[in-house]
Length: 496
Ligand code: NAP
Ligand code: MG
Image (cartoon, rainbow, N blue to C red; front, side, top):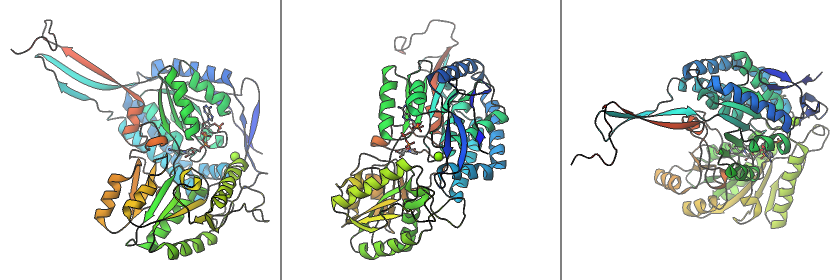
């Protein structure tokens, strides 16, 4: 029996007003129905925004450490349910259990971090230019936020947004990705159990075109926090721009790993395998390009292809498997379309390049780990995000050329450089256009207490994770207190 989930609005579990529902099926076994979910529309969003607006009036006045205490309780509940949530997540989006456990752990870490931050949220005190006057700056909440998340990190990404939003005194209307509603539902249940008051967190399930659009267009939504594709992100920025709504965007990537001839090649090989094929390549930070020094190229590609061919692909619930399916049939089609483009562009298909449809894989959306060599910097497969288990290998003559190739994309999220030469490493850190650079480690593996985000079309300048996430969800209030008893005029009453 599959579980039936409901929207959570103003503390009540309610179906979509239209009564419509949709099924969420496992991408590893499409006969497995993970859950039945409300197929909501703008009318449900309206109720959720009203509930969040009402709850904001009291929630914003709750002392931040008290709000933080709820985050701590949520963290403890997540610890207790880690395994159960990981299993649901593997069923609904396919990545292997080891990775879905990591995804939940990131949520737990983020909750404990928010608990700690709730006792900081430091402002500043600043000397005045006038006597008997003091100045300070502190954080205030923004209001009601729309939270729109993708399917690839069904727990981590919503927690990155919702914990800092709540800790700083905002209320939220949350629309999870259509492909991963169950993990989101479990998360919101935990928040309710942890003591988040009615209306502070509301979840509305349903498609981006209806529920997402209603959220971003609602005049009572004061900020939108979105993670997803650059295409949808640009549209959201346009809509928010019309009313100058704050919006924070975490978008696509076309991340590269550079390997120089002096690197520890064994380590670099493990790094790229994990970076390219972890989460079936469906990470915003996935290694989608490998830039190899020409002197090590042929041997490295041969070793890598051997390892990629040997990867065990299958249902993520089976711990023997190393790579799960693509999230959906549409995603698998889009990946294969890029593979066909790569072949047409003249790149050399080294391994993979097709859907897995044999008896062991026919129930799901599996795709073979794929490597292209002889990729040139201006080919589409070198520049566009594929979001699947497809790696494009390019050659370079030196580190400067490697960085030029790495920067030859509209994205700028993550990057990696393998070298033992510290001078080269630091020059690459200076010149790489990306929000994140790893030295001797793969492009994936963000830690929750550090700023996360990218440059160029990867975002609009905000950083989630770490202390910077709390800035996204805060307004600054500047306060001047004059205790002179007289009228003092800044810039006019001077010392001379
Ligand atoms: P997506 O298609 O852009 O969808 C993301 C979310 O936006 C989903 O909840 C989607 O709803 C919703 N949405 C779609 N159209 C909308 C609209 N017109 N208005 C409002 N909301 C709308 O992205 P995805 O396929 O789920 O995720 C993959 C993308 O996310 C990749 O590009 C990846 O690089 C990026 N990503 C970035 C980061 C980062 O931090 N930089 C992290 C993870 C993923 P539906 O599910 O109903 O379509
Ligand atoms: Mg699904």
